[in-house]
Length: 338
Length: 260
Image (tube, rainbow over all chains, first blue to last red; front, side, top):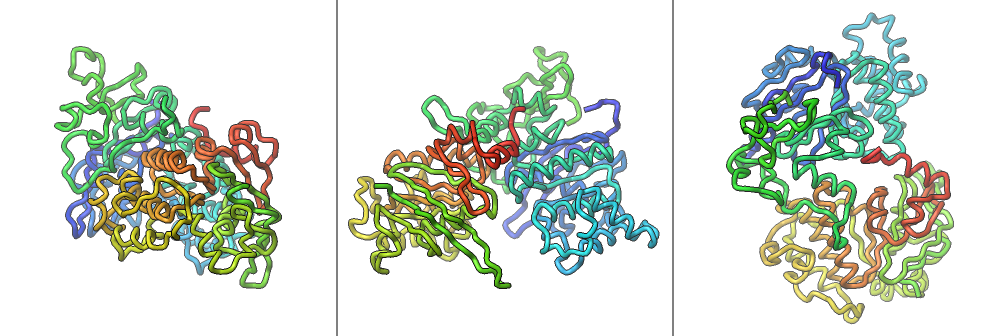
């Protein structure tokens, strides 16, 4: 993180609820996150953690009828986009933020040639005589041969489809790319190629990236900073190397053990006990408390503030195991944006 | 006598246009009693096809499948039905493999009924649905009997699928990507359960996976498949730390590291 660069995205204490027949689902319970210009940030969570909801909120893609942002705000390059209507979003998408998804096939039109789909996203602000040339440039940018402009999505491999979707996303020169599990459906060797391409594109275009994933290994290879989200709350964040060197929240610690398939002294694989959280219940304390091996009485009562863990103020955790900002023990500690 | 021996198996698919695709080419693989073998490869490598051949769900175009020394191809259909029960599958998507309109009790009862008398000498056979559920860590078992698959969490569904496989008293479990659908925090639970089952019952596993970390943590031996062929096989610790083949090296290098 370069502190001199301004933020491209600020999510501040966002609460988002889905209305369902079974009642309200509290998908985001006060989630905060900041991404600076040019920065690659990972958002790590399991299914139901709210990571995709958060990503969609950034682009106004959550359904207007059934979801509602109850509190908090989302600033994009300093501009408040929290309350934009669907109509207002139409003009926003693609710039300054674009998104790619896990399953490119469901976002590519199956009966339209790849070149045409890329052209659609640039025609609005590109002179007609420049369109074909620009499509070629975009294909080249994602390292696809320009002949693929004539191909249909089903003729491409999974990796090529993801590149094609990436070309569509890059068409409007976004300053932030939101990538939701972009490599989950791919083989490891193809995944490595796509991650290398993303790294290369970010460097060449100076583009920031929010990478949503359940895979800590991908964060290690692709992101400078990361946020760990659980039940709609960010529990820990910091520079990738700091969090990896010393994960602080018991949930993050558990995730690392599980991801490495670590075993204990008895040869048992490390597990996180219990069941995933019920988002129908109003969140009071720390959402991880029911599964936490170190839970205390405070944990079920209320959510602690953030504790800064290092001098550079880049690594922070929200957990009662750590001194609170007001405590005498951490008189110097203060809350930083996260 | 190995539990399962695949002997020079070849399988060819015919595409709709008539083109022939050799999914598995001259593959030999052995799983000993109580052994865990991981079949590692990328999509399209033929590993799932080989798994289905081992289960007797697909007939190979060439080669033999031997169960306890007897060739599947030479069995009568009655014999085949009886022997095949000894090999049970667990699939990636437990939701798709459990009938959504049946409660857990029915799913397990159906499986218990199909268990052939005397098909297994295993000492720990559960005789009721409740015992089965508790043996896969769903306690108390009675609390789960009336639930439908959609009322269970992903981890619970995978446990029910495992319980159903165990109801048949199998000697080999063919697990095709059993953890791909599971969250990271559930993975350890399922791996522990599979280890316990292996220890208690002396079951063999053929674990089909694209996940190197699972193969490394769980398997005794590893076979690496690429384009229908096994390019390298041997003890897991050796193959996954000092691979000799270029493809295995490339595969290992592509896995994102947690610490670089």
